[in-house]
Length: 80
Image: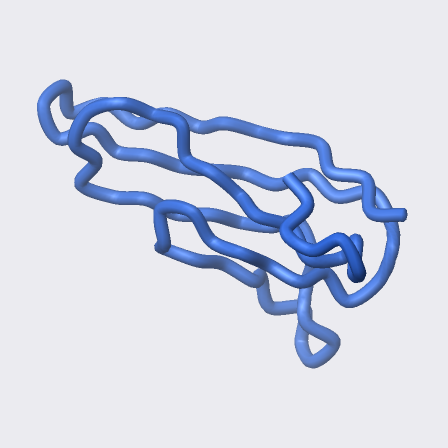
């Protein structure tokens, strides 16, 4: 998952789902310093830089076009 050998706080996320998604939403588990806003992305395979080391729980939400269902995937991330 690391996207950079020189900076372990930069992480490459990957959506490994198959089929056509009508919605993709990532939440990285960290928050901005101003107001506690969730940092999110709608990209299929985003790269995200965490501001500091720590333990994070990321979440991927996918809505499947052909089946009409929603899938949530949680992932534990430890940035050292």
